[in-house]
Amino acid sequence: MAVDVLLGLQWGDEGKGKIVDFLTSSYDIVCRFQGGPNAGHTLYQDGKKIVLHTIPSGIFHEKIVNVIGNGVVVNPVTLMQEIDELESRGVDVKSRLLICDRAHFILPTHRWLDAASERAKGSTKIGSTLRGIGPTYMDKTGRNGVRIGDMLFDNFQEKVNYLIEKHKTLLTIYDELPEFDLAQEMNAWNDAVARLRQYQIINAIYYLHDALKTGKRILAEGAQGSMLDIDFGTYPYVTSSNTVSAGVCNGLGIPPTVVNRVYGITKAYCTRVGSGPFPTELHDEIGEKIMKCGGEFGATTGRPRRCGWIDLVQLRYSCFINGVTDLIITKADVLNGFDMIKAATSYNVKGTKSTELPMYLDQEMIEPQYDNFEGWSQTSVDSIEENLEIYVSAISDYLTIPVKMISIGPGRDEVINFSN
Image (cartoon, rainbow, N blue to C red; front, side, top):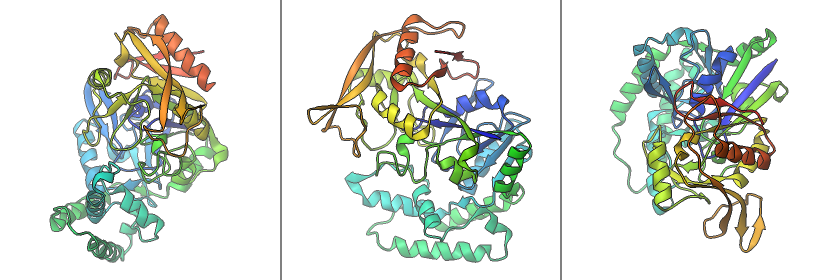
């Protein structure tokens, strides 16, 4: 019985979708265990780009079952749009996708609340994706949420109406509300729910336990990144779910004793979307060059990503809270042609050297200390260029975790198997 976990070690956008797609053939089931359509996993199929927001990244593999777990929050409109795109490409979604009855619905008024709350914060905005994620998790923990399985009961509409009225009351606390056509949004939402009834809604907890008993291999796919975890991330600039490996147990209903490998994904550099501290951020032409070479724009929001050097202090923190067993480094090709590459190996915090991540990361408090590495030009998967190997080995040595593979392009086959 084994569940392997694959998750991001930075602030998201590490290239998890491509790696899940690459590894999927070794598994029977791929699961999403947290987050919602604030995630954006980019894959390339036959040279064409597709972004998955809710559906697990194993969906393109014919014999793989894909499960949306109880820890995920689901906007049925977004989900149906995603399904439509997949089915237009010939993917038989109905036979490959299972949705847990305990996953929570995102209602249109959740998105309205999200937008109103973010606007009210003014200059202290956290950079919400405005997808209604936070308000949905608030209703979940407040025991007011509407779950996917509720649509199979006669009092479903009653529960939906109650929650909408509650949201309307909450909206009255704001002086100014964003423009929002609730009637139109609800019509689209109801249509999507009607379509959702045609898909496989299951008790995923029993399904996954039975799968484990029969020797099925399961891959749990994380969304966002470890530094956006509600407990361990750069609070309050975080998401509303547990993005770390511990979230797999809550988000799928599995015990920790069945978790085996934990694959941690990091870019060869670092990015962040939205507000919040980012110690190694580059506010110069180098940061601009990384952004342009890496096509660093949010897969969900389209916002330009802030770019900087890799932060090994932050990565070490992420590795030990996740129990990472294998590292995967992505987008090494983006740094092709750079004369000098840097990696932060310690912080100067108020005049004191530290290799610990403090409770609050603040640019005025923290000055990263860097090691320098000579640049590379890696274009082939057949062998690794010497300077890239030195860089990757230094990361592995610092974190005391082996590197399993290095991605050097968006394609499924653009991966170097690495052993050190």
